[in-house]
Image (cartoon, rainbow over all chains, first blue to last red; front, side, top):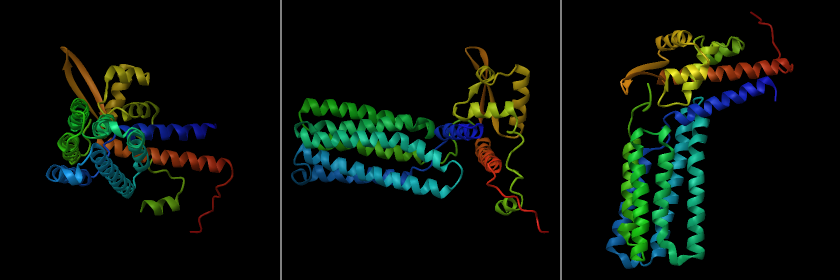
Length: 204
Length: 122
């Protein structure tokens, strides 16, 4: 590698460092909030018409799986469009930094969910709690590029996901509130935190 | 217009801010770039290999330009000076990096003979 190429690579490293510690404004609070409200609607429907929308753990899990996957895709598309529209020198490294956290977590969630639903449907009760914990994991990992208060919804997602897992295990099955309640609160709390208009939450 | 001036004088590199374009200050800002919580004076001194006096002098230049902020607190009854990059500093540093990268790429192309300099017709 020539000196010039090495210098260009070092500039890319510095950009990546900056991206990882700069407030990422690509996540739209409206999109996250809408998923929270949609989740609330799903919980209400499952409570009111359990026979139709929450007949089994499998049905509850697949409903939340599809809703979370769709929500994740909507948030990602919005983030990509919003960030590229800003068109400054940091758009690509910031997107890369955000996606480096989100995509592996999404892949793990999808792979574990798919495997459990396909090969071990008797333990589908673990999925909503597991997914909730993955959301908490991503929120914690994004601490340096999101408002500091993200730790509260992150902690909520992690703890409520863990409690949900143990409750579902103890109960032997899922209930609509056990599966969806933490997801509703988690999404609305994340939307509230990222709607913080403070330009850069850290430093300055 | 930035684009027009770039076309007229492709090697002017006006975006290479002199405040950043100094070895010690570049080291300071680069060290602070990945630290949203900032760095303590002693850490910064160690990372940049500067003396107290030198570091103070360069920090003053950066602070005066509004590119960093310096906070003085007491931790365990001991004074602690923390330096952080400001939003303005972050923004300008990104622009500086872009310009620096372009200068390097143009230099590399010129060295390999793929850049042709045309004399001005005015």
